[in-house]
Length: 421
Image (cartoon, rainbow, N blue to C red; front, side, top):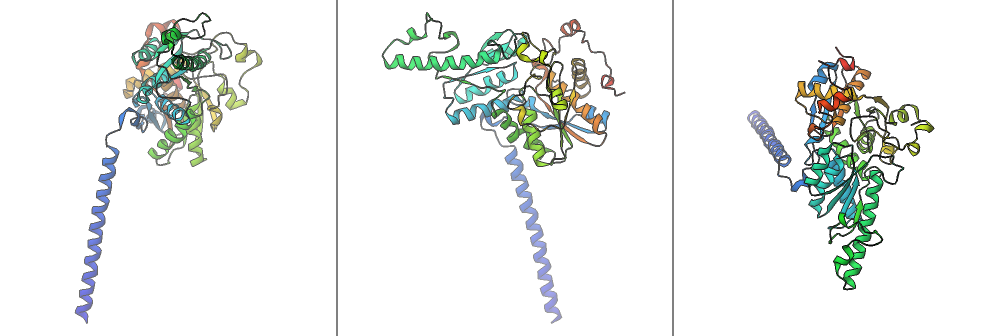
């Protein structure tokens, strides 16, 4: 009987050992399979958008005692966070029937969204027409044209003006639809297409913007189209949550359309209401007052009374004096102000200490990350967005002569411009 017990015990031990070994090999196989899946080839440009790295910004983390993390959106195929927005807008428009293959997507943009739309549109068989303020960095419009889009540069005016770049872009989409409809009618009637495409005496068709085979227009409307918000609520936010394993204390970013800060803040606070979400606002923008005081501007400052560009900042793509539909979706706990000088100094500091060559809005976001770290104190994890690289900002933000004319020559040797010695 004793031998029998030992025999049964030995069999049990062997079975347990075999199970452990088998479990090890199964887990190892699954881990390797997951790793292979993560590294598998992407299916075209569209599949490469998103899932950008989240990196620790070492210099800022060491200086503040917090873990400051930056989402490297400049590594998207089109070079900025706006790739996500362009993809979401185009996909939703195609699914809803508002956009057809062969159609033209119009947008009013200071640069990055336009570049992203011009990058993504060809993957869906569409074209792009961009209306851009003529005070935007020249290299942005050069990139857009190189991508095959048409560019219309206009003077900066208030959004309430009919010739604001966003309002012109909206008109161009309507004109493209009229143009395509008129073309189809002429073909059905057996008329020569060239007669329709030629200069009309009433000037109704702006033929220089549209090709003969244009299948209509669609206005992307990045400021008010909630596909912008959804791109970040469904993409950027969940990625940040997963990459931090849900262990973050705060998120901060500036707002232009408001899609990024709204989508990410809404998602993170739904996952954990204790995650603090903040706005960083540049000079000339009214969002800081709106978030902190509930009042955006005085009656004299209302955009309807402004005849000129209201923004007094060298940063591009951020700052606004109205509440967009996208921004309204956000959940913010507070706001900080940033200055042009801080953004300029931060960009040079990060380039020197971390090798990060960032654009103006990315630099401003990093100013915001330090402000949040100073507010919360050491030991916290703070995430921000590195929107784009400095490659699109050479003629202004990284132009020493231009900065000198504005009294913005960088002089700091460390982070003393933010009160850190």
